[in-house]
Length: 350
Length: 113
Image 1 (tube, rainbow over the protein chains, first blue to last red):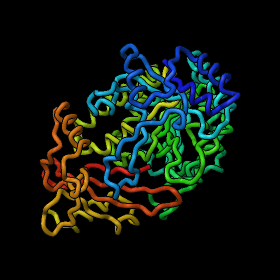
Image 2: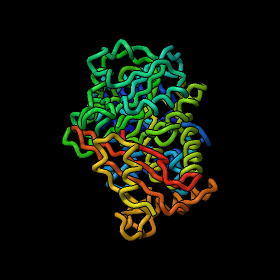
Image 3: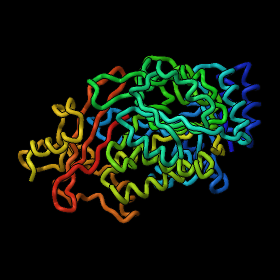
C-alpha cells in the first residue's frame, strides 16, 4: 500500500499535481493521508494486513519523519536528533523498542525539496517499472581507505568483486561514471557531510594521511550522469539519506546535492542509507554497528528478499545479535537502527 | 586499576598517531584520580536519572538474555575527536575491556563516517 498526501501534492505541485498523482496511482493501491498527523498515519498503516509493506510517498515537506533523540553523548556524536521513518511501521501504543526493528517493511519514495514536478515524475516513472526490472550484472563498491575492513565485510555479503578505495581513487581519477554505469549492486562507504556545500560530496580518507586530508571521491553530480536504471544502491556513509537541511541555510535537498535522490533520479530501484552519521567498525571482524547492519541487509538482498523486507529482517537480526553480544553499546545500536532508511519501491529485488 | 596513562597508551595504539594527544578517557564513574565523565558506553554522569531510552535498552538486553550492568569495573571508552574538515566531523572511540586473561585490551574501535 502506498500512503499518499494528496492535498499536500496539490499544494506543492499546483497545475502539475494531477499528473504527479496519476503517476503515483500507477504504482499500486493507495491510501490518502491528507491532513493526518504522524500518529494517525501510523494507525492507518497498522490497519493494513500483517506484514504487508508500507510505502510513504513524498519527502519531508509532504510527510515529515519522526525524530528521536540521539542516545550517544554529544561529545562523541554531535547529531542530536535522528530523523526516522521506522515508527510509521509500528502501531501507536506499541512498546517503544518495537520501532528499532519493526516487523512491517517500510520504505519511502521521496520527492526533492524543491518544487520540480518533472524530477519527481521521472522518479515515479522509474519506480513504476521496478517490479519488472532485472538487475544488471556487476557491482561497484567504493570505500574510504581507512574503512577497507568494514567495506570488505559488506562486500563478502554482497557477493561483489573489486573494492575501490579512496585514496588512491578520487572524484577525478579514475573517472567514476564508467565504473558505476549499469552496475547492478552498488555499495558506498565514503565519508559524508551534513552541511552545504559538502553534503553534495562523498570523501575518501587514509588513516595515515595528515589531518583534514579528505579527498573528494564521489558526488551527487557524478551520480547525476550515471545510468542507474535497475541498480540496487546502499550507502554506509554518513548522511546519505539525509533529506532535511539540518543547520545549513541552504534551501533544499535535491538530486543536485543529495546522493540518494540523485540515485533514485537516475533509475535506481532503491537506496538504503542513513539519515545521520554512521558508526563504522574499525577492527576485525568488522561486523558491528553500521557495517554489521549493512552486511545483514546484503545477505538478504543477495538471496532475493525484497528491499524493504530485507531491511526489516536485517534490523531484527542486527538488534538481536548486538544486544546479545554487546548490550552496553546500545546507544550506538539504537542510532544505527533508527537512522537507516529504505527509499524506493518496497518490493524491489536485486 | 589502570592509570590514565596506561589507558591512553593502550587505546592510543589503536588510532593514528596524530589523534593520540586528543584522547580523553571516559570511564565508569566515581573512581578517584580518574577523569571520570560517564560510564563506558552510557549517557553522561549528569544524566544518571532514569532515561527512557536506557530503560528500553534494559528491556531489550533482558529479552536477549543479557544485561546493561557493567561486570567489568575497568571497562573504559576513550574518545578521539578528529579535527573537522569542511563539514566532516569524525570521532574515533576505542573500547577497552578485560579479556579472558584479565588483561585490559582493545575490544572495539568505531569511527563516525
